[in-house]
Image (cartoon, rainbow, N blue to C red; front, side, top):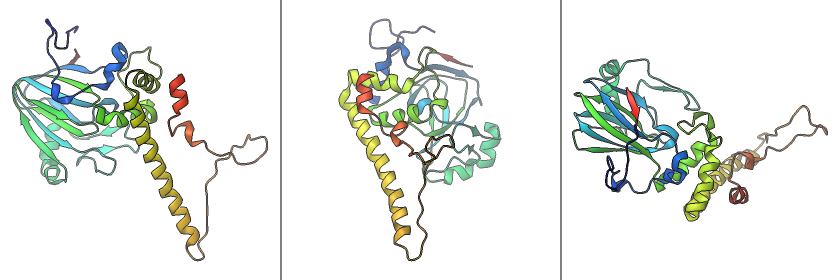
Length: 267
């Protein structure tokens, strides 16, 4: 819609300062879609979903009121009652309308650990953390503006999403062929300390997963009479007929040297 956003004269609005830096700003015009003007009648809304690209969001109600129900989205947390998610989380199915879900699963959902719910009225702003499930219902005709952003605390989540789920990445301009490497390169240029910290956290987590797997194998070896096994990845077309090792760095740890070289309307 061509609205100016920021703290300068003539801007339509300014994002709330309490949410801090939006790290996707380093992408400039190559950032994914992020600002939305949402208009809907009473009893309209959105079914359960997570915001795109592992981003966080804020939602400011300009007119009317909205009911929200939310659940944490960390890996070990169950999905909301009545919501079915594919193994890779690329597909979300809720076989009921919002009204049917409320009549069928609302009471069960309220009793689920981690559930948060509330009503936002005119002039109020709600924060949706990265990865959280949320369902929204307009309690009256409503207008709201919402913006997706990447706080510094969730840069790791966004990097992992862009790297590991490229088929689920959305909203980037057509000319952006590799959102992950673009984000890494821009962070290296503008905030190398933040990128190094994120890389360290990712590598630490992935090393921890490898140690857990090694402990499982070692435990079987130490168990009396237990068979010891290991996995290899072979290819029928190998010239020497031997199994080839799977290079974890191909999609796992970030190569530091390579990084250094290398009715909803959009507002």
